[in-house]
Amino acid sequence: MELTLYPFELKFRHTFTISRKSKDVQPLLVAKLAQSGFSGIGETADNSYYNITVPMLMDAINAHRPFIESYTLDTPEAFWDEMYPRLKNNMFALCAIDLAAHDLYAQQLGKKLYEIWHLDPADNPMTDYTIGIDTVEHMVCKLQEFPWPIYKIKLGTKDDIAIIRELRKHTDSIFRVDANCAWGVDETLRNAEAFRHLGVEFIEQPMPAADWEGMKKVFEQSVLPIFADESCIVEQDVARCHGYFHGINIKLTKCGGITPARRMILEAKQRGMKVMTGSMNESTVGTSAVAHLLPYLDYVDMDGPLLLAEDIADGVRIENGVIHYADRNGTGAVLTRTR
Image 1 (tube, one colour):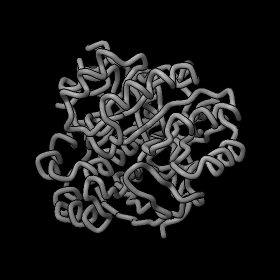
Image 2 (cartoon, one colour):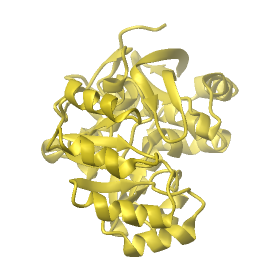
Image 3 (spheres, one colour):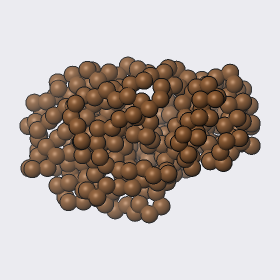
């Protein structure tokens, strides 16, 4: 296979703020794998919480360029098994390679990716749209600027209940709340009680990932479902989250791509847990890959391209929460620029 890497820095539509940080630009890396006249693309993002930068991603992948370029793709799963020992310390890099391999493989078979898995997209979940932390006035303006059926509201302030109460005055849409590890046990339970009367569907990662004792109390006492994000990174975390969370949010970048994500989805469902996939603010490249997992999912947060002021690809379209696949094989994503 031939390997090409494309680094990007894409501006956000608005400053994107969560409980830990704010940012105006999202650095991304796209990997392209070409073989036998076909090419597939995959994407991954930088992330300061996990100490991942685009230069680190490029170095990690380039270190194995000779192996990758001497490899003949049979199945993405077999390729992932070969690459995992080489990139197990950088799952974000492995994600880009795995997504590209899935796209390439499906194109070689002349099918959309979900067709290879014999999935029916008729009842796909809709995606939410994220409202980052801001002044409540600006958060209201973002709601009004982008009418949407489901919102994910980023919280982690001293006025979280007041924020949701004010936002509720301006829309009847479903709310999902993501605290990004900002709360403690009592605050989580208190907020859940208030939020259940304010149209909140569930709470994502309310407490620090290391607080398993606290999460057990919240799991047993919360009046709203609790989803893991920072507590569920790789495949081994699914079993650990069982009995501590009602559901898990799988990020392809964190777990190493589609190959492990599918296994995580199936394991979580076998354990009676709800499953969603999340966004790391990817462009349409990574978002198009996530879209093919939709028939497996209960919920999805794949609003990355909607949050960006610019995009680098054509692929899935998102209209009022509904995801429309591109009329192409593979993931359906094609780059519209390379720099």
